[in-house]
Length: 71
Image 1 (tube, rainbow, N blue to C red):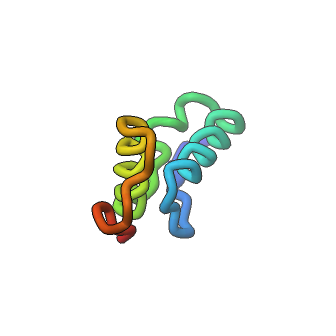
Image 2 (cartoon, helix red, strand yellow):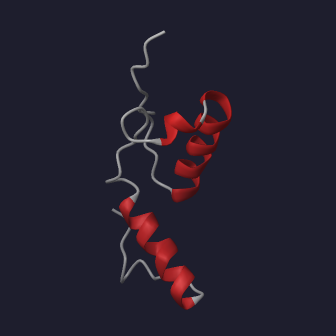
Image 3 (cartoon, one colour):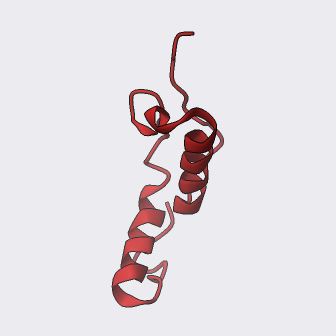
């Protein structure tokens, strides 16, 4: 068959949701589907959560919404 790619919809806003999708794609379709030519999601909704996860990794606590508002 012909590979056309996949972009999940539904407002993926958390890093954990993005990882869940990546695991699903890898387990069901293989490693080729982890690259952006076949699998992608809109990153704008994830940006704040990724920033908060990085902050937590560096400091051991989550940033307040005062400093990193959920957008």
